[in-house]
Length: 405
Image (cartoon, rainbow, N blue to C red; front, top):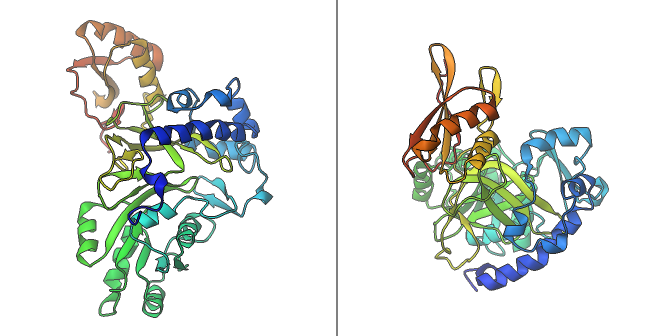
């Protein structure tokens, strides 16, 4: 078990499915104590929602819709049953979106990510995520302390003070954005920061060029994908093959604009359910794009793997003064079973907006697709039939190719 935090990480498929079957009804029942959740789940029997297939029938809740809902019914939009006073901490994130941190050990389920990144009990870690108003710093803090690490709550910025802390406490681990890690290393100059040998980074892109630079400086850095609402969603392991989904959450990849799961390997929107009756989150659509990797990780962890962040799912565009949305493209696909991928390409032609629906479909469907395009969007557009499998697997259903100036 030295390579894994506990036996849950290496469960076989049958044990994992049995655990999901037991906890999903509890999560739904707990969520339905909140008025907005009860309305969303009207007619749903929690006892019957015991697997992914049943869960997929529940409408998604879009993270982008939370600010308006919370403004109408503060502070949590009616989606949380417990009052603010029952939480350990209360936060706000850009949007604004208000969140509560439940009481207890590692409420954001971060410890597994730190363990996979090489952090161990007794380690000293420099946590450069903010502790002010937003939950980022506390999310990391909780996971580190649950693992038995000592935390330096330095927060972001103030490079000279950070270097003084490193000199005094000699942390072995860094926690923060990859960009700020590079800033610290560059600013150190002749100062000794070689004590830092591992890192957990999040909150910003970590391209291969920067990964190589950090590794060349003797730091083994691992990525974590999470949000302020949910904590850890998935994390990198020593296998370096995608990100393993956290044990406390269930990740679905759905067609943008819908709640319909896509095939394994296909890029779509990330939808997350938190498998914790004390903090129930049901099918929260994050607006990020990713895909499921087939098979299990070589590191021995058996949970689902995702490829990591592949862009944003919100592809809404304004055409001739009217909004065209991904869910409308999905609606067109639903009207014509048997079609493959669709992509609505928006361009300029003769100083006017123009639309072309590229469709992996039989040529005989071209006229019907054009009629559906006009009926659904209330805009005329051309249809281009393309070969099956020729459209990119990048999650895009609307491609706005109009020049920026």
